[in-house]
Image (tube, rainbow over all chains, first blue to last red; front, top):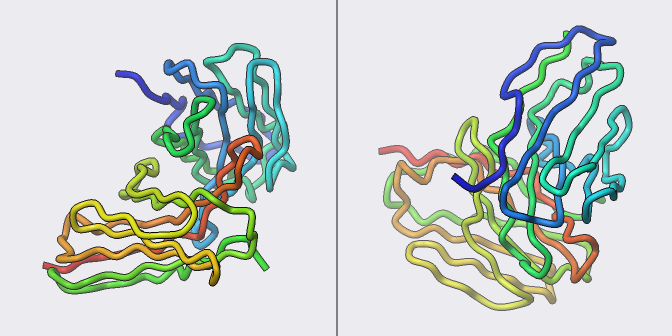
Length: 113
Length: 112
């Protein structure tokens, strides 16, 4: 089925470890986004991309890096995980000219201990 | 002041009640307004959307935007237990890399 796929779905990291979250979409969308969702905080934008090879910072970029080497994939990296990065991470995408049709993945639950 | 303010609740109502959910915002450049529904342990799904000011109705759901007051609302009529979810308002400006700004989300429980 077409959509946004996030891997992994769950992960537990120790403080200081690194990991990469993968977001893959098969809808040929130009724009892709990484959000984090914390209790009482809503969805906050970490980084986004307006096309292959481009990335930009969002509201809460510190501690994260991203890459968009292929149009269909958007990677979110944590170089040295901290307990403050315990969260649920959502990826979303939309195509150019579509004002409302954001597609979200099902999320990655990350716990940093 | 955050760009988008939404009371996080939670809100608990009996089945059949009319539910009113609201958000206020500070950025007058917002033009596209959306409501997302998020079930537990799922990603957000688009529920309603409106452009600029006005009302939009879809079945039991009505979305309203009052740009003069920087205030948006979602009404749910004849609420059902299946409406139990977190509701997030979201909005964006024209262009701007299509970035959505979300409210905190309101957790709604509809009791049978």
